[in-house]
Length: 218
Image (cartoon, rainbow, N blue to C red; front, side):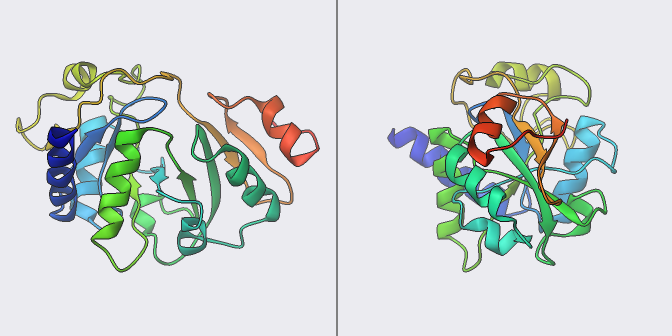
């Protein structure tokens, strides 16, 4: 674990320096940067070939981060975060001014998720220990847009290239072995009176409905 601690410390330095890091989550590998580092966010869009209108999900280390990153959070969204975070559920909420528009495809919303993976959790906590404000990592899946997501560090290299091979690849990969889930998170639009499914994923719609006590729009 000592070696992983050193790797996480290095990853924090890379992120704070405006770099891009690939890391494992409970679903698939993500490739991320600090939302405030515009050049790094630009690199992520370029290396993935991702349309700039497609927002990046921000990964956070605690449920309380919603208050710093999102506005007008409905009670049902808090209930869902309490039930499924950490886990494979992304909640789309109205964003605060702390989230730059270039991260969200110029939309007034932001997708938040709290990953349930020990390495992702340690990375996010270590990053927040170095900051006075709540810090998340903007991270889509570590693959070219439209391709199959990477479930291992080796698959990240196959899809995006080895670290240090240029701006078209991550600066660092945290190798946490194979991701346990291999299916992306479910994405819910939580900006209305009740949630609406934007993408089916690892968290079932039935489980969501059981928490909020009503059917979910799809």
